[in-house]
Length: 211
Image 1 (tube, one colour):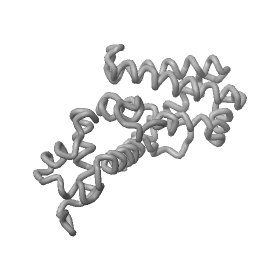
Image 2 (spheres, one colour):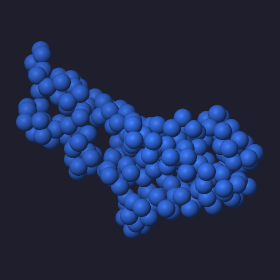
Image 3 (tube, helix red, strand yellow):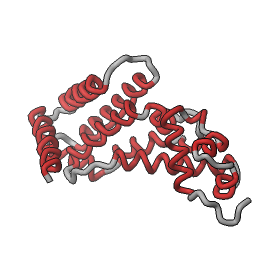
Image 4 (cartoon, one colour):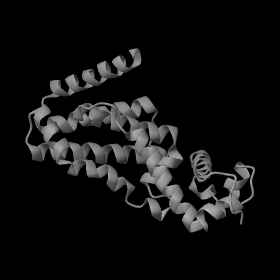
């Protein structure tokens, strides 16, 4: 093996992730990544040792990549929650293979539990408290609202990426929005507050575009 590989580790992982997004996790092999890099397999073996080390590193890299996509820009908890939801829909439509890999555990034990990371938002007491205060509902109802919204969104997108349900991006976002409103009403929240939150998010996005 070369003592000083010419291809950096980050470039290998970036290329592997691109291959995953393009054609699915099942097609990501050391030989396939080397071919995409126009290289031998030696630099990959040098950095990761074996296929197991390579797959583990790829999982960590993919999770970090998706988390950056899901990171909201708004400091307002309600708007941030909406941003994350929209970003989650975008990942499903723009990168369905990545969605399956990360959130449906398609082919990799290293990504097992990634969806639980999303569900962990419902255990964020600060978020629950802010939702509760904003919509004037008890904490337990705010928790129900968050849980129902997250589970519904995940179920809908899982059905879409698997082909069980046919829907475009806009339709998916509308379905999620309508479900959120229904869950909010079920929790006893003020629907006008939901509209305020939505308008707040739109104004924030427009302000960012002007900067």
